[in-house]
Image (cartoon, rainbow, N blue to C red):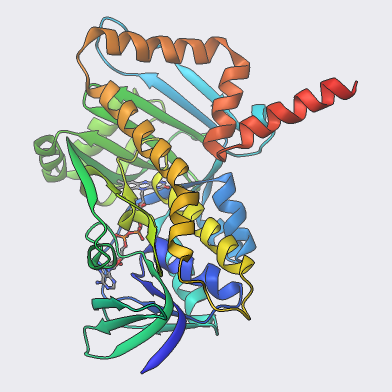
Length: 401
Ligand SMILES: Cc1cc2nc3c(=O)[nH]c(=O)nc-3n(C[C@H](O)[C@H](O)[C@H](O)COP(=O)(O)OP(=O)(O)OC[C@H]3O[C@@H](n4cnc5c(N)ncnc54)[C@H](O)[C@@H]3O)c2cc1C
């Protein structure tokens, strides 16, 4: 029976990055992940804080050639409603950054992660899934699909929405769905995007173009589920024409590449994010619709927090039996505020209730007219706490003068 300090269950983006992060602080890690995955044609926008974390892990230089910077983000009200919000534009240079973050194709991100995991001496990759987990005061025992048993001082459950790690620990979960699917695709265009991402808000949800390197972009188009099936069945030239129409030909002629995919949208939040010798991260802990690029960014903050916590105990000392409780306390405010914030924004788009539309339009109007508030929002979007830190620094500076 093999023993590890940490067993990471699930080798998606969150699990692979967690394994790497904990291995890099000297922990002996087992990454337990079944081999075959379905093709994932999505792209992921990662914000500045996440990019700096990937830099610290030493993998950003290999990812960067496949990524495009997000220097400007704009929101255009594409609804046909009576009360429409003004166009809101957010520039990274206004918060002293070159880019808010970068957009990365998931196959490129997974490819670099997989090579880094294979090259990391502190990680043992086990090609199996976890069938059962049992906890004692001293350790966790994981029974695998091939019948083998491995033990670990601590378990990281990164096994996605239907997490077995969460279920066997008796942690409940709240799930709620939306009448929406996200159609994701990449496209070539004849005009340059200028590193600008444009989000059109429509009655069915957002239609978001995000730059890729060259004259290419990715698209997340949120529609009703039957409309998603209709779009997937369209011949490519017709789909390209419909994307171009929606973009109001801002990027010239559009040609859709490859095979579009549809992802049903729902939200999920575990009742707690850690317990005893277990921490839940990524979609095992929280999931919500792809609005404002929050999902994996939030998961990376789970991992940063876990890495700091487990590095602080010192690698010569065993991981304490209550590390899960500590992790739960640390992560609760951030996870809850992001989950409910995204839910509120999504519902405000779907709502036909006039006062809700008025509030959304007024909110965007205030943001366009009040640069300090806009800057605060932008800084908080890049890294929670950054905006408030900058206010404190400005106040300190003014008091000293
Ligand atoms: C359309 C769309 C666009 C998005 N865009 C963005 C974006 O721009 N920016 C952003 O930050 N986020 C974005 N997200 C969110 C982001 O994609 C997810 O947060 C992220 O991919 C989730 O990764 P995960 O590793 O937590 O879960 P998963 O990808 O679900 O991985 C879970 C893994 O666990 C494995 N597993 C399951 N059960 C077991 C078991 N018993 N034993 C072992 N392994 C197991 C599975 O095989 C899988 O590999 C988007 C999401 C969607 C739907």
